[in-house]
Image 1 (cartoon, rainbow, N blue to C red):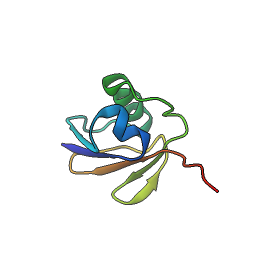
Image 2 (image 1 turned 180 degrees about the horizontal axis):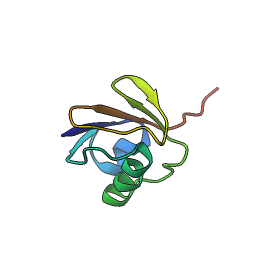
Image 3 (image 1 turned 60 degrees about the vertical axis):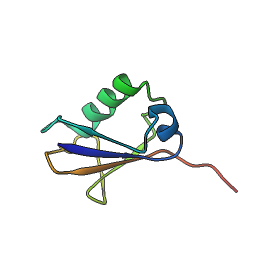
Image 4 (image 1 turned 45 degrees about the vertical axis):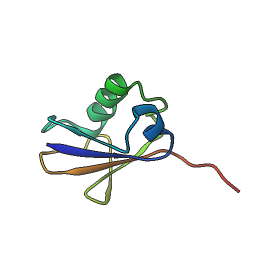
Length: 77
């Protein structure tokens, strides 16, 4: 089981601040596409991803027990 934490507008789009998935062994890129399709999330290309509190690249793999955070870009002044 992979726990995915959602922040900012991703929470609103998914209707929850976290989801759990049975998707062991997929890449971060594949996980983002899967989440986008399941929860109709927008703007996943610029979302930063952290696995177990360390930033991850699109080609990194996600495994059972990981906690993945999806962090969208934030604007401000």
